[in-house]
Each structure stands twice: as structure tokens, then as C-alpha cells.
Amino acid sequence: MARERERGDRDRQPREREESELIEKLVGINRVAKVVKGGRRFGFAALVIVGDGKGRVGYGSGKAREVPEAIRKATDQAKRGMIRVPLREGRTLHHDTFGHYGAGKVVLRAAPAGTGIIAGGPMRAIFEALGVADVVTKSIGTSNPHNMIKATFDALTQVVSPRSVAARRGRRVSDILGKRETGAGAGAQEA
Image 1 (cartoon, rainbow, N blue to C red):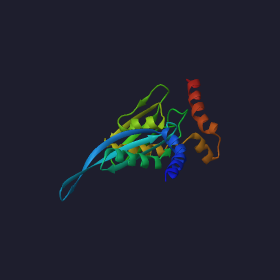
Image 2: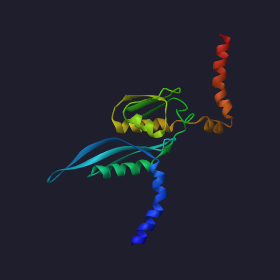
Image 3: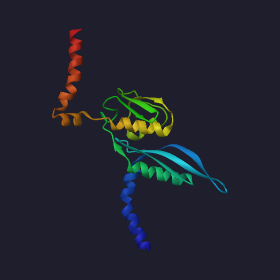
């Protein structure tokens, strides 16, 4: 029995090392009550963001009678539902985008170097876990953390890299990006 445990621990070590690189952010904990015959039964609901700081991020929510168990459930759900977001120069988004979920609406804008993360509440946790260094965001509508996070993930799933756009159109990346730069340069020369 002890040998099986030792062998199981050795098998788990690489996975634990891989998971330890993940950034976990606890967004919120709520105490929830269930009314039963004898009175109220209290539990806890946790909302967690998990990311690797290199373009992958996920969120999860979990409920349990104890806080640590709720956090563990939320973290496991977040790890299972991670998405990959393409980043420009590893620090910001490729383009501006808009997302919504329910009454929550968010606007995400790419920003120049040195801007920092200008975001409030749960959106800041998402971008810190994602590894974004420069972004400007605005949340419109609800300030409910669940809806803000889902709206932000809706916006992040719409971000596409110029490389994938070029591949889809059968063009080169320079054709996609070059038009914007040459258009701005031509306007500057005329003026």
C-alpha cells in the first residue's frame, strides 16, 4: 500500500510542477445559505482566475461547505476551461474588441508600451493572469463579477492574430499589416 502511494506521488510530480507555474487569482468568495427544515445551511461560492502569464487563461466557480474546498473546485474548473489568447509582442492585444454577457459589456483596447493594466475589479485579475502588460478596458453595465468575467472572456475569444488572418485569406502577414502602415505614411507625406 505504501509503495503504491510512493509510486503515485512520483507519477504526479511532473503535473504538480507544471501546475505550479500557473497564476491563480481569487476574485471573490460569497457566503450562500440553503434553507432546510432545521434552519439555514451555509456554504461558500468561490470565483477564481487561472493563467500561465504567457497567453492562456481560464475562469471557474465552485461551491462547497468549506472555503478551501470551494476554491479547489473553482481552480480545477478554471484549469479545465483555459483558452489561448494571441498577444502582440507578448504584452498587449492585437486589436480593440468588444464583449458582452447578459447585462455586462466590456471594451478592450490595445495600448502602447508603458501604459500598464488600466482595468477594474475582476478584469485586472484576468489580464494579470493572462500576462498582458498594457491594456485599457472599460466595463459598461453591470459590475457583477461573474458577468464581467464572462463578458471579458467573450471579448478575448474574438481576438485574432494577423498570422491567422493572413492564413485564412491566403495572404502574407506583411500584406495584412503593411496596408495600415503605408496608409498612415502616405497621409503624412501629403500633408
